[in-house]
Length: 306
Image 1 (cartoon, rainbow, N blue to C red):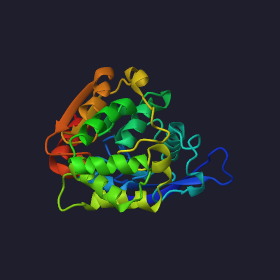
Image 2: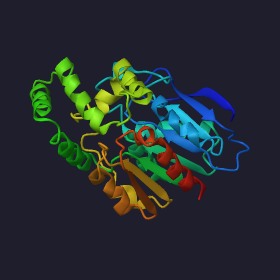
Image 3: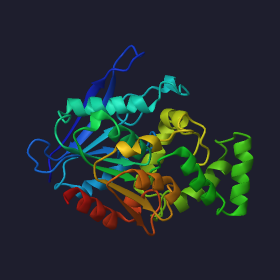
């Protein structure tokens, strides 16, 4: 078994009286492993690291670094910042990532970075900055290059739902009655089609993510919205398309054929990143790493060890 260790690093945030803490977990040996470590950035915002633990299939060949972003999981929670769009910025999470890498002495060593969903958005933003000078390879999984493109994909999937489900969504979204059990049941119909195809539903990975959203919705509700189908948060007009051409490292894109991250949302990565490969997995949705775990890990391993 590869060695494991957990820790936390102080993260100073302007405007806060006390420093935050970023929790992390390392699986493998950062000092002596011949391969570059893989830094794993979870989605949500707010889904936390647990739902990505299937990536431990990549160890012991590849050292892995999981962490929970602030506002989430085992890191500092800031519920009093709910609704503060200026505070919960992409730049905040880029600074947090840099702070973690500095703490782990990984700013000058080659690293690989994996981002899932919102984590892919953050990974792309970070990879386009000078801070990523030591980046060796990038993986953007089940993600989006712009919220406008994501919205096109989500709308198209929504129109394929049963008419009665669409009616519930439309009626209760108009009333902003997102906590209504009828609305939650309608959203679950969408999730079972486009979040994960693994059965029995929900898989432990899906449940882990949904549990964290329920425990502390601060970052998700502020940055994204009340559900995957209602995008009202600070990311509503987000796009990284103008900066993608600055990403020069080999990049792997993955999504599922039934993914809420439809091809229209992923395509700008493929069109604007110079060294890029794109894999779409059949019989998989947003949690492709769960739905087609074996195939998914083989693609990752082949890319990271090439």
